Amino acid sequence: MLNHKGVRGVGLYRAMFFLPVVTLPAAVAMVWRYLLNGDFGIVNHLLSLIGINGPSWVADGRFALYSLVVVGIWSSPGYNIVILLAGLQTIPTELYEASALDGAGPVRQFVSVTIPMLSPSIFFVSVLSVIGSLQMFDLVYVMVGRTSPALESTQTIIYIFYERAFVQNDRGYAAAIVLVLLLLVPVLTFIQFRLQRRWVHYA
Image: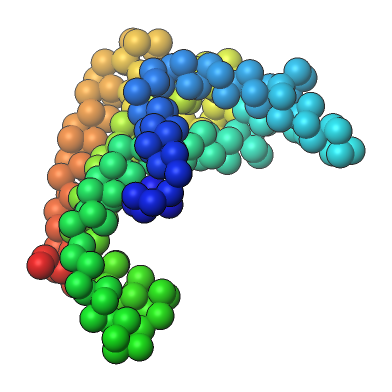
């Protein structure tokens, strides 16, 4: 739908998907914290209308991590969509026409034409996503908070660094965390670059 120029209001759809990217992560986390509040959140209010007693989404350790995942998925695709959309628009239409003449349906075209031609963009997005996931801090700090019982199940490596360096004043431990992160990012990136030889196709 976002790639089809004939869709009415396609520019509006693209802007809606990209909007979370230009919104401050702290503001996003604050809004979702109120939406998912166990006492007066809109999500639990809507669930109560159909007879479901919603939990404390960000305060209960059983649901806090899943809540962060949902918010992270909602807030992160905009940048990736721009890259993937640019990749889709560079795929020659002749490839789809030729595959259609050979009897390929939409599913077959997606598997045999779209995915291989889009694989460089998918690879680039995957590298950025892995690096970005290791840097997550804002959502945990704002949505869960330092005093929440759910913090133990939602801590990220950057949050642990913050706790050690600026709360507990354990600078040595914090420096070790940064060193691990400094080594982890290039190692994971190197692994991705090695694996991309098996599935990424450059035209």
